[in-house]
Image (tube, rainbow, N blue to C red):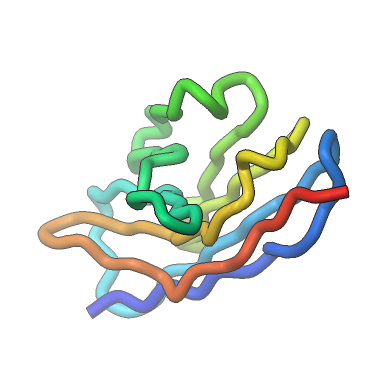
Length: 114
């Protein structure tokens, strides 16, 4: 079993920045992928960014060049630096971990509004 604990959500004005963090604990395999998905009201959950244990990352087109994902393998943490935030980035952001199966965090609310 793997537990994921997220932090860093909140309210920010358009153009602002937030940093999300997620810590994984439990039975952690060395080969894994971690990342972030988000779900806005009335919409399906969608990929934001993921990164594997070798540091290879993939981003949704809508966040490319604005968001940066990083991880610390020694601490089993993943971070999402979000810059130039837009109202359409408003959503619940979920931490994601996968190896032999998928795990999800509880979610953290990000609201971009003036």
